[in-house]
Length: 352
Image 1 (cartoon, one colour):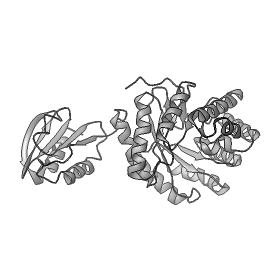
Image 2 (cartoon, rainbow, N blue to C red; image 1 turned 180 degrees about the vertical axis):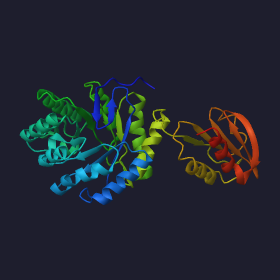
Image 3 (cartoon, helix red, strand yellow; image 1 turned 135 degrees about the vertical axis):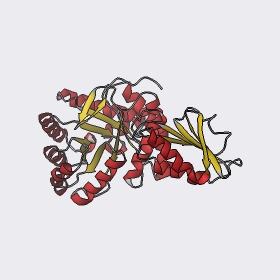
Image 4 (cartoon, rainbow, N blue to C red; image 1 turned 60 degrees about the horizontal axis):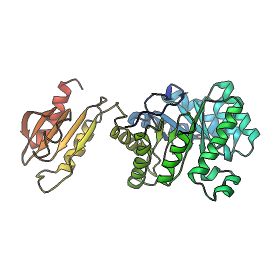
């Protein structure tokens, strides 16, 4: 891992991003924001699985008007997502949003962006400014011919300078692309040109497998380089799946310390148990553990305590029986059907 890129700290409600703060996990509601009951229900479910910042869309006045009631019933910062209508940005800020997200290029007039800045400064609220193909300025389209990394970065720097000219520095920056190599290059370039916190994501990534892989490659590559302060895995799925993938990306880089990690060997001809079922059962029944321990699920003695000796706990299953071990040392041999129950009992006995 490369050292973390130095950046400013921006406070989104009670969540600080940037600096040396942990990388924060975000998602976005799929509900109609004015449907308070449905929106709150989805946010509470997302909180439960580890979402730390939530974004909702605010296209209409009725959505902005719903924000205070939603905010009263949730426990994580709410970000209002704004496109085109600067009045919705102002209304969202005034109605309690912890932050707003805008693409300045699609607001329409710089005067309208200035009005948003005025309100945000008065209320001391941050903004995420995003740049993508849909908001790229006409002159940059003509200069580069397409929304290339160079074009996106030039647009972002242009807007950063605009905000700084108005003495507003409470910014988070995002440069979204569905092309993973170009997404990576865009963030590498902007990281070298500014010290604002960066929001990472691969936009329009796709469904669970496709989108999860694209997100892991794009987000993971940048995080490994020390680039990135908050992430959103964009999937064409239930938002709960976004949080699961985001946490696994962070855990794979040792950047998430809030729950257990399960590792498991691939199946092969040596395996004499239903290892897939066993691994899923261990994952499900240890999901409540909110400490950064590593649990190994291995299918034979070859990959048992030896290969996974660095795991805090592990099971190695054989035909009819298996072993349970802690830090590479065998604790006991138990019947196959008792493996998970005995493993959980040992972990619980250690107060985890």
